[in-house]
Every structure is written in structure tokens, then in C-alpha cells.
Length: 236
Image 1: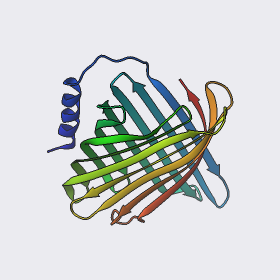
Image 2 (image 1 turned 90 degrees about the vertical axis):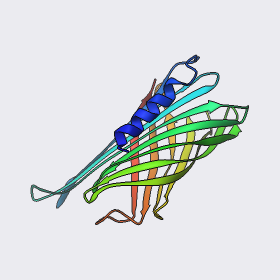
Image 3 (image 1 turned 30 degrees about the vertical axis):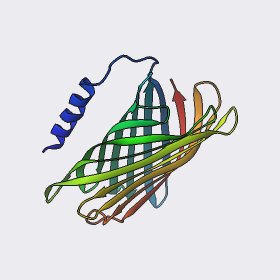
């Protein structure tokens, strides 16, 4: 099954779900840029977009993380890295605490043309108050990887946890972690933790640490990537 068919399956699943919703989309856009000059010139650009929509029973969550890193020595570009990590989650509330979930995850990196994973499962709101949230979900599905050596398809188990804590009127702590366990023994982990400082109702700045770990790693790559970002953002 091609990755395109996974997307079609996801869209098909959405069409049979209840469409009645309340509430509007809420979005956060963060941009981080860093430049270094000298013997080695480097530049890094990070664009992070998140959007959510909550209804009486349905909650949509979209997250897109785009990272581009280049290094130049004596005018010659020696390294470049492009990472695109996009996730979509649909949560269908069943009880006050429990919900079922459909997750569509896509990841693209150097050495990997693309990884698309479609899973279905369940989750629970562990904490849900005005100042703090914490959600946990788990599921099973299928992943398709496109490598230089050819496509690889595996059954996948997925779990994730995410939440935030409002510390005061201007400061919010947030974080999350996700894991993908493939039946060939590979384990893939993603996580982030950060803090957001609000200047106005819409304008804010942030600091975050992102971790991506693959075991075994892609050919020619280190198993772990760490990314520290200082961002300026806006909410809508």
C-alpha cells in the first residue's frame, strides 16, 4: 500500500464521522532564525505551525515543524539538512475522560524520502483544568518508509503524551513525547519541551528543545538530533 493510499484511507475515515462542530480554529505560528559568521557560516530556520479545533465531540489537532540548516566554508556549501515533520490527530470524545483517536504522521529527513504512519487507537485526559492539561493516547497501524534502497512497510505501535501548564498570565510551559515501535525492531522517538512568554494577546516569544531519536538510525546518520530554538510567534 503506497503512502498516498494511507492518506486516502485517512480522508475516507473522516468522511464517515459526525460533522457537526462548534468552535473555531485556533492557531499558533512560531519562527526562529539563527545565523553565524566566521570560518564557518551557518544558518538555521525553524517554522512551527500548530492549529486546533474543538467541538462537542471532535477535536482536530495539526502540527507542522519545518527545519532547514546549512553550513558554508570558504563560499562552498558543505552540508544541508531539511526536516519536515507533520502530524494530524483526530480525537472523538466517548466519555468525559476517554476518547478514540486517528493519527496521521508524516516525517521527511536526509536519507529518508518520507515516512507516513496511520494509526487508530484510544486516549485519556489525565488532567483537564483551566491551568493544566495532560493527554495520553496509544494505537496501532501501518507505516510506509521510502528509502534509497526501496519502500519498506511495517506494522506500527504508537503512543503519545502531551500537555501544558499555565504558570501565570504571561508564561506557559508545554511539552510532549511520541514513540513509534515498528515490528522489525526499530524504535523512533520524538519529544519537545518549551516555554512561551506572551507580550500581548497575540504576540509571544518562546524557547524550546526538540529531540528526535531513531534506533537503529538511518544509514550515515547519528541516532539522535537535538534542536534548540528561540522563536517569535503569533496566535490567531
